[in-house]
Image: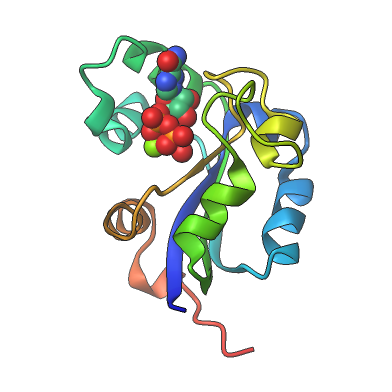
Length: 143
Ligand code: RTP
Ligand code: MG
């Protein structure tokens, strides 16, 4: 087993539905520790930079519109195999395909407004954490 950190977003739809606490409860209940957290309202430039890998995709404009439509919560989660563990807690991108009991099955409106983001690999986790947090904003958890 490997102790990892992953990057997570509670997207504007889920913040608007007052689901921050419910979603943090899922992370903590699964044994993931929150080691950094803040609310931000992305500029278009920030959203475009974060999702740069999807720049050529047909949904890119709608994705940026949505991600800048209201505040989001960004957090760093730490735990054993945190990257994969968080993807399992989230469920499939399209809530119609997401397993029962996952965040997207329970809380997402659609493939576009799908409640949460989580890094898809360790390398992207490192890049995404650094995009939002300085080293001083991350608090190592010893217990
Ligand atoms: P995320 O990056 O947000 O955690 O989601 P993901 O890995 O499951 O999905 P990804 O392929 O990285 O897509 C990023 C976000 O773009 C929107 N999307 N829309 N309309 C579409 O076909 C479509 N495909 C992707 C979703 O909001 C997805 O979370
Ligand atoms: Mg992704």
